[in-house]
Image 1 (cartoon, rainbow, N blue to C red):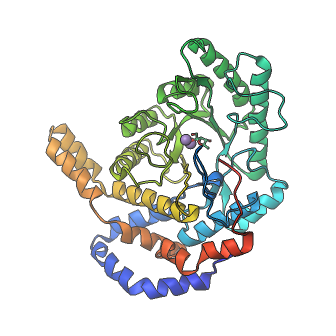
Image 2 (image 1 turned 180 degrees about the vertical axis):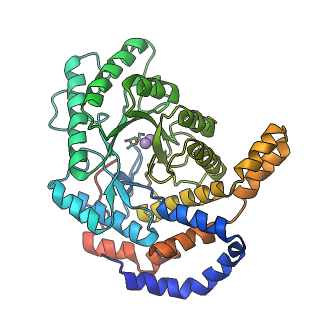
Image 3 (image 1 turned 60 degrees about the vertical axis):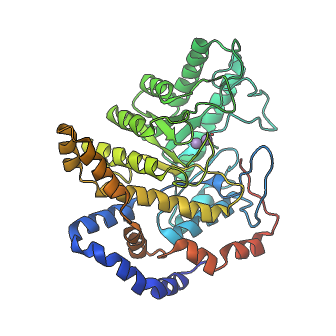
Length: 424
Ligand code: LRH
Ligand code: MN
Ligand code: MN
């Protein structure tokens, strides 16, 4: 491990006085403050294996060096993040990018770093060298039953890997759709996809969930067979109680009201989890909170209110994952920023007095309702997030410590300047 607890302790010691000063205004309302800190400490966000390397775009890729060369090294990187922030205690694998050679050893390596395995992701959007059928015209929707069967078998294989690792959910994202009008019969594509999903659903262990991830466009640009939350919900409802909708923040058409989608999916008990990221245009996969932090906060407001109304456990009843990909930042620094942005939005949402908000709504007092939300959004909760990290054994300032310890340079030293991760 490139970072030990003494280094973290020293870093915290040097920053403790300033931190205490920043926390002081919060100590007046002890109960509220403590409740938020406890919730933050319990809350973990899974790191996607494919975000640990430089993502690139179809126009080019500019790797920064020291990227993980294997699944083991990806696990090590998430271990580093978790040591720094104590909130990245899980990794989400993408098969076949991350096939474990020895599941028991992989599990052990992760456990030693305090990590568990979050949702496993299948990949029927790329052709692999050894596969007989091509996904050029779709996978679960394909007109040819042999292609559909290959994609079904792959998903079942992914479940098998997940079971070996202790994962409890499968995320299915399909690039299936059409690029041109006339290419596809929408209804038949839906039906074939549904039947294929039924076969995958039948292979789920009883304590597993399947997340049906939707996306409005890309790589298909005329229609996507799971293109929006309506179609995802339809699949999830038809499949049964183990199927849920997964919301990737970047997968909506411009200006979609994602918080309203979240609210209604929760109401129906069909919200499964998230792929957090941010975007200005489409599936930009930018750092969480970097473009629209207010939207993120409004989503968390719906989550807190909706989950509390249903008696759900914030930490464990939904799948919390990041889905990001970068060309210009150090991927680990970016992930530290993303996790912190999520924690900030969560803490701000916890500040909202939901009873007062309900009163304002019932009185049609639009101004007060807005004030309540914006008061919370404009509150600097970073001292609470830092305190949660400190108590959990993490660093007061993870990003600063990452740089103080020259972790990327150390990784380059170990793995080489040309080490490139598998993935996107
Ligand atoms: C598709 C997506 C999906 C994939 C990941 C690599 O855009 O969001 O979640 O599995 O990117
Ligand atoms: Mn995604
Ligand atoms: Mn995406």
